[in-house]
Length: 179
Image: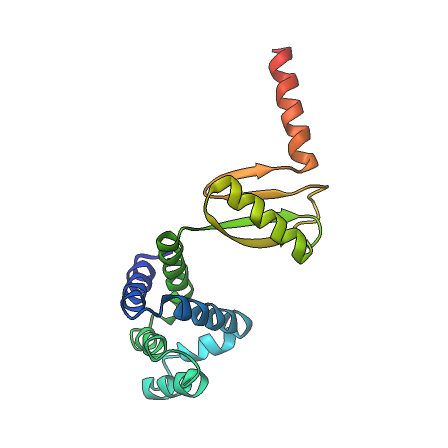
C-alpha cells in the first residue's frame, strides 16, 4: 500500500467516522472494489488521459450516483481528478484496517483443500473468537496442496493444523533429537 493510499483512505475513514457512516461506506467501498476487479477495463477507462476529465467524472456519476453515499462518490471523483484512481484498492485496505482496529475486529484467513461449509466456517469463527477474545472476520481460501486440515493466519500468527504442518513438526523434533 502506498503512502497516498494510506493518506486518502485514512482521511475518508476519519470523515466517515465523524458522520457515523463508517460501516456503510466500508461495505460500499468493498462492492466498488469488486466491480473494479471484475471490470479492469472500466478502471483503465476512468484513468485514460485521452478522455476529458469531465467525461470520466460523468461516468462515475452514471455508474454510482444515487447508489452509494455521496461522500464515497465524491471520493471516487477526487481520485479520478488527481489521477490516482488506481490507488482505490489501497484506500480500501487502509479504511478497513482503521475500521477493524477501532471495532476490535481481526482479519483471519483460513486455508483448506476444499471449500468449508457455512456451519463449519461459523464454528471456526466462534472458536477463534474465544481464543483471541476479539471479533473475527474470516476469509476462506482453498489450496489443493493442503492435504488435510486447516491453516489459519491472523494477527501475524499462523495456526497450522494441516497434515503437512504436523509432519513438519515431527521432522523438526526428530532432527533435534538426532543432533
